[in-house]
Image 1 (tube, rainbow, N blue to C red):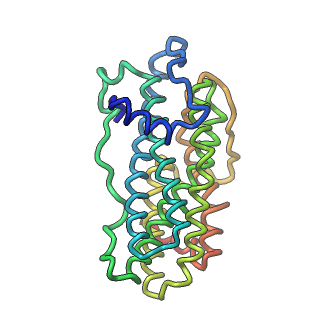
Image 2 (cartoon, rainbow, N blue to C red; image 1 turned 135 degrees about the vertical axis):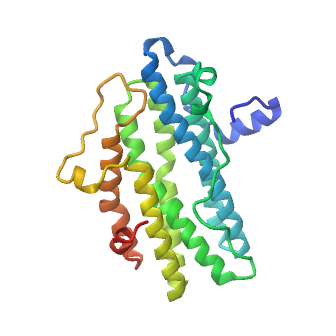
Length: 282
């Protein structure tokens, strides 16, 4: 995914994607850190790269569907920004993974594998079925933006705090500057879409939220249940060396705190029963 391309194509990409302040990956002091630490960081950064790459697929499909229902051009413009951001995030994470453990490409290529992304929802309905297409868009937006992107921001804030390496911190902060826009797009879009949904479509959206919450818990909480961290204070602090990794407990506590403090209340504000969806998660 980081393969070289022609200079003209590379220039087009860099102009669009490499914002001012792009991390100086060549300055990463690889010799200052032992290999187990660098491998652990490469695993997490590579996983983030794959997740960001999957978001490119999700948002481009969403843009196609919203174009088919003639969504406002302002929506499409905002969504185009999100797609560009996700390409940037995927490259940032992939380059950070490679910088941490360049020899891993030969030693353990699976760490850097790029499987084809799989969508967490079904294919959109035909463009001729406008009601069904808006309902499908609501399901996709609530999963990708309202839940996924809302979770990403506090995760990246924590990563930026704990890392002790300037390149890893610059990488996290580049991504963090975009994340609030992604979640905002989701909540703003849902504010407009939900009132136009019928009872049947709302049931479908609610079912999709429940499945998504279960999926995010499985992938983000690292097998730690709410009861395991109940009453505990989350502790995010810089104590080195750290190349942008979080512990399983930190991931879990950020997940549950964000769910309780942001996601469920905002779902309720949309007229969707967040607590019920959480109780019925798959």
